[in-house]
Image 1 (cartoon, rainbow, N blue to C red):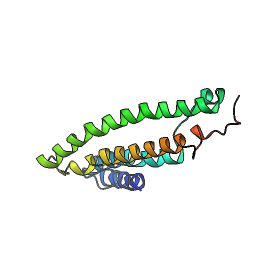
Image 2 (tube, one colour; image 1 turned 180 degrees about the vertical axis):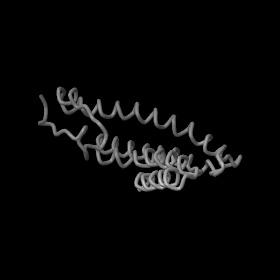
Image 3 (cartoon, helix red, strand yellow; image 1 turned 90 degrees about the horizontal axis):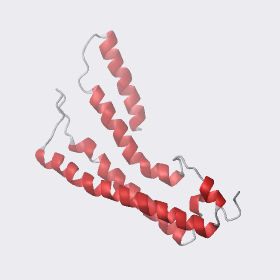
Image 4 (tube, helix red, strand yellow; image 1 turned 45 degrees about the horizontal axis):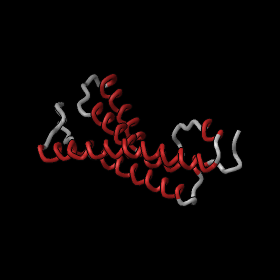
Length: 152
């Protein structure tokens, strides 16, 4: 939805600048913040649905127990990275909240609103990663979505 709204806002900006000959005030910032928010808030859904790019050549070459270990190890490293980023983003968002930071443009958008998408999206991504790890560790989900029979 955020991307669709961004497309509409870009069209509005082009109309205002090219047809009406006026300057745009808020459109560029809005589109930038919307696309970033869509990225962070959409990442848990992409992980859930398997919409990310996956190279499964090595998992196809190993046995199912090794796949499980590879999956859990890879997710543990990714969870540590995302968790670190989450912990670092909360003070950043809180600073914008408490200090009342705004954009330098004439629009003066309050920065805590778009900044909130980062810790919220990362928190949801961490939850999705933990869920996937528990499902694979308990055998309720196949690692990398590959059945034990699949392989090279």
